Amino acid sequence: MLQNAGDLALAGVPDLALGRSSAENAQRTLLNILEDFAAGKTRLESGQRAILNILDDFDAEKVRMEGAQKATLNILDDFVSEKTQLEATQGAMMNILTDFSEEKGHLGEIQRAAWNILDDFDKEKSKVELANQQLGKEIEERKRTGEQLRKASLYSRNLLEASLDPLVTISREGKITDVNQATELATGIARQQLIGSDFSMYFTEPEEARKGYQQAFAQGSVRDYSLAIRHTSGRITEVLYNAALFKGEDGKIEGVFAAARDITQRKRAEEELARQAEELARSNAELQQFAYVASHDLQEPLRMVASFTQLLAQRYEGKLGADADEFIGYAVDGARRMQVLVNDLLAYSRVGTRGKEPVAVDCEKVIQTALADLRKALEESGGQVTHDPLPTVQADETQLGQVFQNLLGNALKFHGTEPPRVHVSARQIKGEWRFAVRDNGIGIDPQHNERIFLVFQRLHTREEYPGTGIGLAITKKIVERHGGRIWVESELGKGSTFYFSLPMKVVTHGNEFRTSTTD
Image (tube, rainbow, N blue to C red; front, side, top):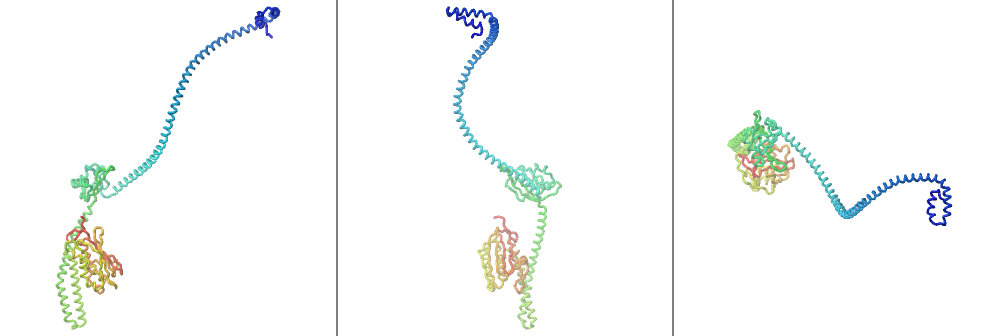
């Protein structure tokens, strides 16, 4: 159904135009509409006003719509522009993506290279870590070395200061670069003043001091260089300087290290010793002269006493009674022994005065001569003497023969129940020939090892073993004249070994020989 007349009128206008056949129906309808028109007019007016209000609102909305449409168009325009830009951006993006693909390939290569670099980096990192470890060890080692050097330096300093000898270091220019406290005490000058000053100015002879350190620089060292230090008080200290070069870490010579030994007391002792030696030499010379004169002058009266007592024994033996025969026997024996003593004393005194210059002596020949002189003792004792090959030495041949004869004679004399067996050997030890005469005899108590070399010292009675007790004293004096020494090693009942040494090279010093210090 139609809601109102307005709606019907609007709907019916086109129906009237459709044809006359429907005109009557339309006319009736129209009358009915007109009848209702009055009633609906009011409603229509109300609806019309509502429509007008709507239209008014529509106009406002239309304006707003038109504004919105314009905004939309503007937006669309902007959208087209943005679309264009978007398309351009999209194209650019496609280009970027294309480039990205290429760059991706490059990136893959770069990544592979980066991985290789990282692999190499890991390797290098390991090397670096290893190097760091090694460096750490080296640093620790250097720290330890540094600490050791510090301690060594401190130790050296303490050692220098502990020395009682003045110690100094000297530059090439002759300036003192360091000193110890002993130098301050020797000069009376403080260390600070000594350092940087001229080394030679503290000696009584500055020029000699200068020559000393210059000689050290030229030759590398100086030994026992005699100088005298002058103290500020005027006191003089006699010293012997020993100096040597010292070098830095680069191997270059930095200066001279010099040490002075105070020999003041030693020089006084040497002077006193020289005085005593001179007195002793004079006394010995007098004693030797006295012994020689006494023994020589005693020879004639002793010969007379011995001759007449022997003559008395021959003529009156058995005629003056048993007591007289006994007394005459004592007199004859005493005279004979006195002659032997005087001869031995004469031989002892002649060791230092009648000796000969050293010559090359074949010890093989000397020992054969000694054995020939001892033939009777060998036969009586049933002894046997053997020897190793013996060297040629520098010696007085006669005196060396006396040494062998005395030692071999004692070995044959002082034997026990068994026949004596003696062996002679020699070996070279530290620049000397060391001889050994070993026997199987009765031996010696070690407490008498020194005593047996003294004059007239006997360990046995004449009834047990004959002799004067001077043979070993003569032997000792001969060996010492040759610059050697003699000693014995023995035990009672186990035989003895007498050792004596002779230097391989000797020089003469008066009537004595000394070891040569040159080749």
